[in-house]
Length: 109
Image 1 (cartoon, rainbow, N blue to C red):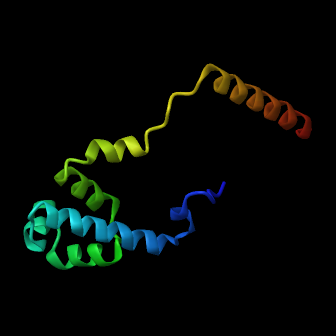
Image 2: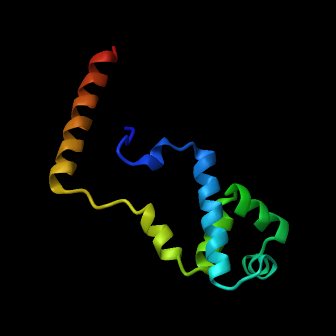
């Protein structure tokens, strides 16, 4: 489902990556790291860091290293945490699953 209320959803993935790269650069600067110091600290080259700051494009492994260096690792993990289902949600899923099983049995001959 598309979220039309939040303008961030109107941006392309590349535009969002550029924003994230700029935010990373600003956080690095605010923490008084040179590009070389920060790149060394997270185990990548200065050229790679420069590219990440310009384009926002990186690997998940590098994102984890960056998050760890900025003490944001728990927040990164929390972003993708799946909330516990309520009893009603569990019941609804069970009902849908049961209906699908019945439909599948009818199709098989």
